[in-house]
Length: 197
Image (cartoon, rainbow, N blue to C red; front, top):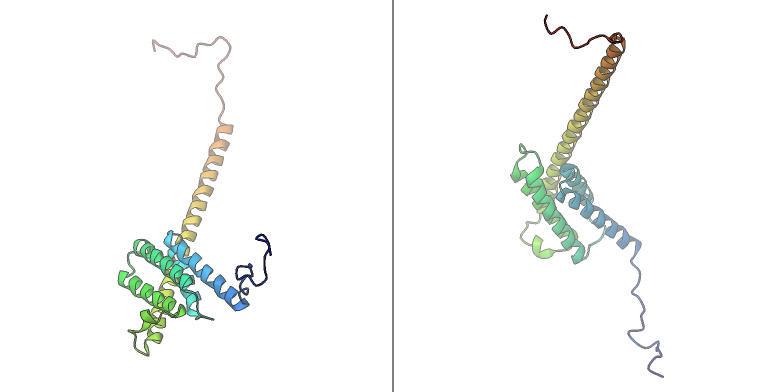
C-alpha cells in the first residue's frame, strides 16, 4: 500500500458516528427552544412572557437526559435571564420571588441534565416542592405578561385615538380655511394701512 492509499482497517478512515435518534433530535430542539426563550428574557425582551414559556417547557419534564453541554448552555442562559428579571420585572414583584423561581428552574435543569451533585442535598420529597416553586413563578410571570399585553393594547388604543383626533382637527382646520374669504386688494390699492390714523 502506498502512502496515499486508504485502508478500510484504518481507525481514522472517516466513518461518522451513528446519527442522532429522533428522540435526541426532539430533545435538542426543545433545549434550543428553551435557550432561545431565556436569551430573549436576558436581552430584556418581553421578560415575563419568555420566562413563563421557558418554565412551561421545562415543566413538561425530560423525555431523556440532556448532555452536560446542553445543561451548561441552559444554566448560562437562565443566569442572564435572572439578571434581566431582577432589573426589569415590575418593582411590585418580590425579588425574593424571582430568586426562588430561578433557583427552582436551575434545579429542574440540573435534574434534566442528570447533575446528581446539584441535587444530592435535597430531601426525597423535594422534587415536588421544586416543581411547585417553579409553577408559582411561571404563573406569576404569565400574569405579569398578561398585564404587559393589556398595557401595550391600552397604549396602542390611546395612540390611535390621538391620531384620529389629530386627523379630525386637521380636516376641520382645512375645511374652515376653505370657507374663509381671501382678502385680495384691488389693483393699485395701498395695503400698508393708514399711518396717520
